[in-house]
Length: 551
Ligand code: GLU
Figure 1 (cartoon, rainbow, N blue to C red):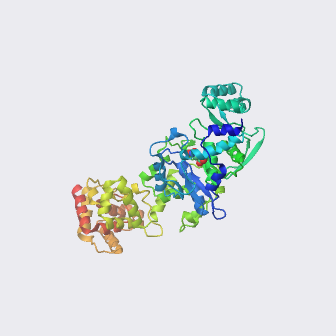
Figure 2 (cartoon, helix red, strand yellow; figure 1 turned 180 degrees about the vertical axis):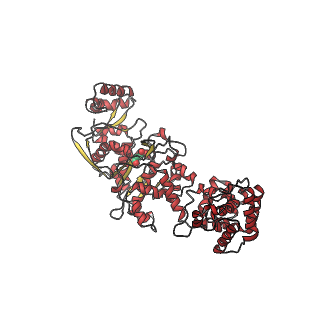
Figure 3 (spheres, rainbow, N blue to C red; figure 1 turned 45 degrees about the vertical axis):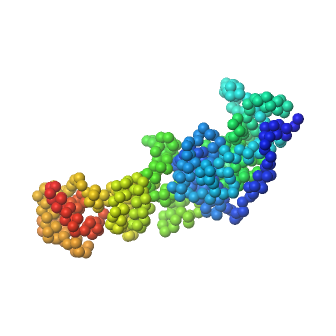
């Protein structure tokens, strides 16, 4: 009896060989230096900050080099799958404008010639590779029960030995072919293990693109490559898929660093070149004096839906991710304000090896800055799109008053240093609500320095009757406010007022505040002249009347 007989018994229906698959999935014809990268999540339903960063980096590296970025669903651990898990991931990527060139689109649809892109549909392919290993005596069935494995582990712990299935602990390694054959024929349960050719005393060196040179002992564990449900383990699926899909660069979390000796060995036993690896440190969060990993469970800001709901522009998220991805990006962007991320060349070697601290405030600042340079029409379209989903009232208002709203968004926008009031689409309402009569109902007025109701009434009455004129240009408008100021015994010159405050009832600033608050109920608004131009005469008169009555 030969190893081939054993392999045929285990995989009677596997006829294709590795060579066949090499032909079905040939080397990709891409330009020199083109990178083939991938995002390979489990179908857990949503993308979190850490995996968004990994997929962003992978997609950027492929785009920069005219390569291929694809999405592979890793569902060999079927316990982790959630309903609509694939669609959730596909949607998150779409929402965050991380486009895939190939990959799964749903359970039933995909894009590209290197699929299937869902691991559970690749069983036959994995089996061909495992069959080959068994034929070559490099893999074997293991009949050890969970209980037995646990006993081994306890014994190793008690004797302070290295944990794992290796050397003298790997009892099934030496079972004769005949015996294995018969036990399988008799229906005994088994899994398949790699017969590791490694020697723990020898060293290997891996050159990680982020962490640099790392030295490890060779792997000598007979790791499980096929589980009892017939599906491969992550390690084995990684080898087969990244080889056949012709991946050149793997970017993944650094929880996989310790598995590198296994992965390198798996590529070696098949004589394949391993891809280049970039292991990312986890994104951290500051909590008081300590730092901890940003947690999918504990931190709402780890989920991408948090940003969608908040209405942070996707481009701002991209800019932020780029600052985490490449330490030199911020400086480049400062010097190239007119350029976009597409013009920046990503470099794996400029990923920070120590990991980054998640900085929501920084992301919000980037967002604020980004929004300030958009055209008013672009702001409008974005807010409309966001509000449709998250704020029906705002959606209806700004749909009804489109031009009016665009004018509001134009205030102090097209200038060298535009205003940066808007940090997200959801924050806009609190900046502009007073421009809509529908929202200007139960308002309160805080006139700041001037508190006497009669004085306030007098200021407002005099202004509206004597000085307000809709057609005034900005200088005239301001001169009239100054005239009003002087007429009522206030100072129209701030410098002079500061020098001799006792000579006046107050200053021009106090007077404008009264007008501003009466018209908007807010004492902090953008340019009052521009606001009044948009509100127009009738509304201004009504509002001043309303303010006087409320005194
Ligand atoms: N499915 C693995 C995970 O979600 C992927 C790791 C990799 O990118 O190779 O962690």
